[in-house]
Image 1 (cartoon, rainbow, N blue to C red):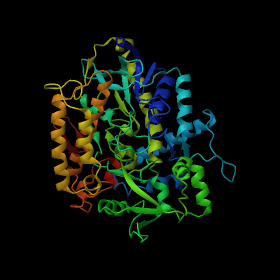
Image 2 (image 1 turned 180 degrees about the horizontal axis):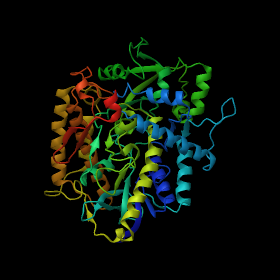
Image 3 (image 1 turned 30 degrees about the horizontal axis):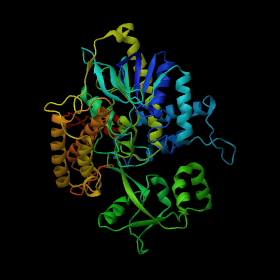
Length: 529
């Protein structure tokens, strides 16, 4: 065990997925000295690196762009912003073309000989992004989870501290600006690639005074073969669902019918499906687009197009939901000076409103917001001048690091307590005000106990902080869900099944010991709707 290692940088990027690597790359290209700190190994950790993803890549042709923007506005409760949609479509188009033309990404070609640039294989994508980041001069700290942010005397963010797991010692990065690209929060549900997605960035942001938004739109559940982790729900649009005895499960579907699946599973029944609605052309295209989806079936000797197989639903929280750190500017700044957010750590309401899902918009948002956050952070650091590294920096971490009472408690018990309130379908997916309130009472009590006693040092600090982040995200999610007394986007309420025009707004949330919510002013897109 060595002493604390210190670094200085213009920009610190926290995370290692697509949003983080684009942020680091573009900050470096803007002239910043950049450090990237990843909880895992940059290029292999996170949900993108574990699979493949479609991308919201649309040629700049007016009719096509209009159709792309209109396609999900209704699903999202008309809370998205057309201006942001256009920005993301433009930036994604540029970034994907760059990947092909200078990044050397091997996009497949269609029958007409043109490259198909509307999808990415996660492992190859992230392998190339790591190479590009290193070539840009970014210093990568692998297996180095950040455990808290640092703030300057004026309240701006001045870096972060963490623990280098393999080296076995703490570290600190003094920086002019920080980009949080830590991913979303899937509550350790075992969905593929999400074990590092524990909502850490949202906790760190809230501790320095940042706000969150859209947390009620965080009840995403993905379909996966029973006892596996691969959630590729889009392919289940080709599925026929049935009960164990082979009878059709009426109303079950990948879109608009997952609640039927949830109710069947809650009743103790099993749900089976077969992708028998896909023709030969679709089957070939599916295998080409997402080969990892078929690995599980191939290993089990199952042909998903002809054989019935059992499925389940896995919680994906803000990884496939919409909520996250609230964005306060075009450069993805937050409400705290010096702090930026990108990817799943940031809210996607700007382009998705109250509904998203896997791939497509998520992948486009990751690379676009990463690009903007990296450039914005570089500009902020440059404006501070060379003295930014010498600012007095104060640690901002609380729960799990600096208990208010006598140290004690077990991070594993906290995680289990949170999971009991957020993973069950009848609490989080099939939402009802009474059940939400009951769960929130338990979560508030869990937070009170962990805040008073949970304490981790060294490697244990990460486990304690992850447990605190899970509890914090769950409380923001349910408090926001209770504040939206209607059904809009993903936020469905059994006790308020209709959409209320008076609630055509977004909901901000924040706070730690006392969680608050408030309606946000309508966006230009909302006001015009």
